[in-house]
Amino acid sequence: MRRIIILIIMSFFLSKGVYAGSEGQEELSKKKDAPVKDCFEGINRGIFAFNQGLDAVVFEPLAAGYKMLPSPVRKGTSNALSNISTLITIPNNLLQGDFDIAGKNTLRLLINSTIGILGLFDPASSLGFDDYEREDFGQTFGKWGIGEGCYLVLPVLGPSTLRDTLGIVTANVGGDPWHNLTVRNDTHYFSDFDYYASKVTDGIDFRAKNFDAINNLEKNSMDFYASVKSLYLQDRHRKILNADTTVETQDDSDWEEIENE
Amino acid sequence: MKKINKYFFIITLSFIFFENSFATQPYLFVQQTADEASEALNKRLSREDKMKKLMIIAKKTVDIKGIGFYSLGKHRKGLGEEEKKEYIEIFEQYFLKSFSSRLAEYTDPKIRVDSQKVLNEKYTMVSSVLLATKEKPEIKIDWRVITKNPDKPLIIDVIIEGVSLAKVQREEFNSIIQNKDGDINALLLNLKEFISKD
Image (cartoon, rainbow over all chains, first blue to last red; front, side, top):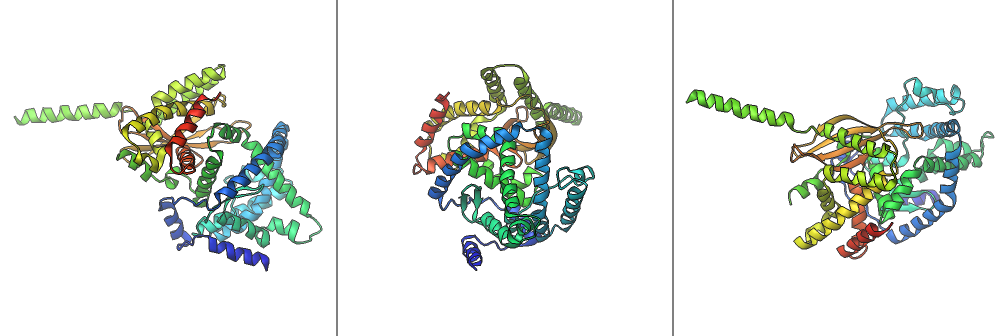
């Protein structure tokens, strides 16, 4: 009941989109990007500083150590995490109306979980299923036309929006098959530990893959908080559009204004 | 008279053709720029020397002034001519240091230009990829090129996997100004601090 109340409260905070399906997608790509409000900037900056501290003490050293592991170990870990993520991607493919992609991802999951030994190897990519893109409930809500709501920084998890946080909540109340298998239901095969270990490892894997890029950005930013916010929001925008080309995601009117001055 | 007109027409046409055929194609310009930057990063130079070389490349291939005004966003409208001049002078120093410092971390990057899309007579988007290495996957990089002068195209934005670096910078600048109640001097102070730090 408490979770349902949280969902209802959050849905009020979100700006409501009026478009749906493919028309909504078209409308979304054409509209001029309205800036996402930073309604809780003071709190967000506080949590961001906390996360930076946590990164410096925990994630950065762990990621540095992870980078030292032999390449096949890192590759295998990354493959296994990617395979687990297919479990939440497939229902989101279906909810977004991408039935053919859902089919391909199901085949990908079956091949990699069996021939690929629990996802450690990725034979599916060699068989032509190589264009895998993770999807989550935040992206699905975005595709349905629901606005981002306010920008948020979550403790440990990092940048988000109210819509994306609603997506995380949805995953945790039954939307994520991996969460259901490990935390919600007692399957005797998996435990809570498997879920949280996979999430922490995913975080370390991400940090290691972007090790230099993140450190470089931090070093060269005058307002690191604002840079991360911009990166996150632009990245989410592109992912929701599933755009192959930049032209579809970029708004030219700002450049035109400079030209006209 | 008719004949003269005809010759005049042909000569004019050939001039237009001649000029256009020598206008620099944006995708060739980007490939050449990327190769030049790659060469600067490939050489076994010190970080400082790499940065110096990258600054020279940026000065001739990037529309620094355009990016500077874009980065100011709505705040540029309230500026007088003198303030604009001061801002651009500081911005150029900031940009060159920030740009070269970011790139100097890379070693031997290989960029392959794939295609270009003419957005309008002023802008072309060039698509390329930073080729995968053993450690890192392939990265998609798009370049917004201003072609107002077709003989001298200039880069005005770099978009990495859909993330516009000019936009990131604009939002960073906006945040600094907004947090000081719209005072642009706060930004100038930050830029100067950045320029002077080691």
